[in-house]
Length: 401
Ligand code: AMP
Image (spheres, rainbow, N blue to C red):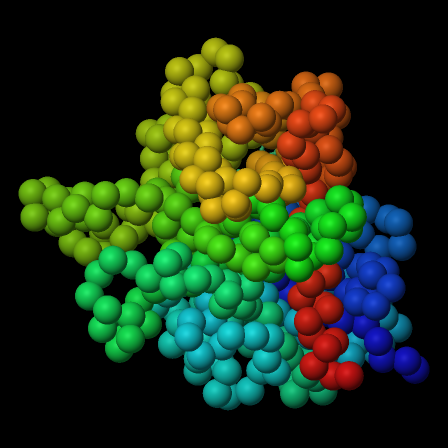
């Protein structure tokens, strides 16, 4: 039996994405998503042999129960597929200073991922759950688990981007610097853009916007990251589902000293109660809701406008880093791939750079479609559905060749 398939586990705070694919010919044999973990109506969707299945599997499902369901209900029905798995690739959000590229997971690597929880408290612990599940359910592949790091793409950032203007020894001694995140997704879509535009990756100048529950924007010059909006942790930068993104750091002192909030409470507010959820006064973190209510509801308008204002500010600043040649703006992630409203507002605010949207193309390029949405003879604006699973599988197989 030819073992040439990779199982990919991409564990997020409220979801588990999984896929079995051949990284060489890119054929997907199985892929799926468990979502709405820890809330009502936890749901699983999976696709095999052209068949799409969807099931509500209960309320408040945990990651452990999600893995149990995936392995016992789905993988058990696909035994022939599973005997062909060569290795398991895991998305790991933060590699810190020590894990700079994809690596086979051993005890040392697990300890490093644990150490880096401080930099990504929302994600690294969940990524570790995926690794533990893989070690438990696939003991025969225990030496064939690979960590593919979201921070790896950013090790080319110049000092002018990665250093904060704080005492230098906080960087040299404690590693406080910009690490970025979403690197796997930004790498995938910029590679795709290079193919679509027929420009070699090493010469590509793009600004890539990954807009989802977590959002970030990255500027790539000559195929290398020049800057990105996420920082030491995935909290900095754009407005996100529940994360604040940029704030004046003095707000933290104010909340602590004047309002009497503990640091733990402040951290929880900035990570879990802010962003779209905070701006809508706790109504929702779901972008679909504010997009659907934008025409009639002032709270939704406020949230959308602040989200777009912040993103337009970043894109404008990043444009200036490209020495006058921007090959394309890329939109990806749940919001970037689907929200015609966000794309329209953003591009209208960037008209000074000669960006213009084609409304018809904008409306028709959604729900998994890829393509240009700019007016003819203006800066290319591309919608590219992300495919982190493919990059994770390609990185994984490289280590066993
Ligand atoms: P992600 O984290 O990439 O899965 O993206 C999740 C975000 O995308 C959520 O805020 C969703 O509300 C948003 N989203 C998904 N589908 C749509 C859509 N059709 N229109 C607007 N936002 C969407």
